[in-house]
Length: 196
Image 1: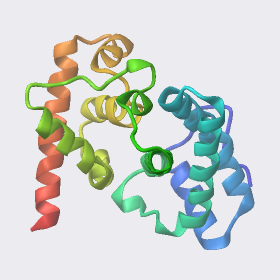
Image 2 (image 1 turned 180 degrees about the horizontal axis):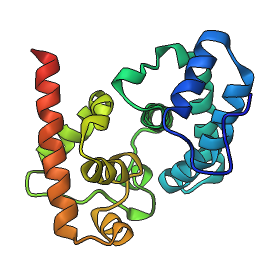
Image 3 (image 1 turned 30 degrees about the vertical axis):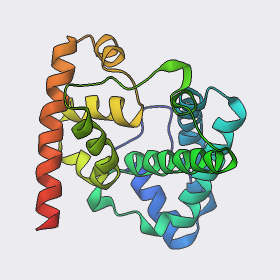
């Protein structure tokens, strides 16, 4: 079975591949998932760790989890790429926790490669609470308007700074921040709805 073409992936392609892996342990579908996502996860890992070995360890662990947990993917709750990048982010956190358990303390530099610290906003405790909740909110990303979803994915999944997103999308920094604020409000509402 060949899923990928030379053109852009079609809508639902990766969701279909995950379904084949979940139902039939389809190795061809998994190979296509691996071929497409492994380089993207490696780039994500290099940005996070700045170390090829750690990045590749994260890719291997994340893609192994995709194979093992494919049956847990629910297309009605979000797209495959968000689910896979959430797995990778969780693997990254696990790797940092293991590193921390081997050391008495861990510095901020171990968490944020190259001093690329997250931008502080006026209400930083709310900002950090929001980051911690992002894992639970990942399924609600698809409900966001495309412009807000794109900014949120770049900031929270790709962990780019607000300025990097502004430069990459050629939009003002204020627009990036306002889209984040609007998206966070929508995601908070979605979380409140799931709690009630």
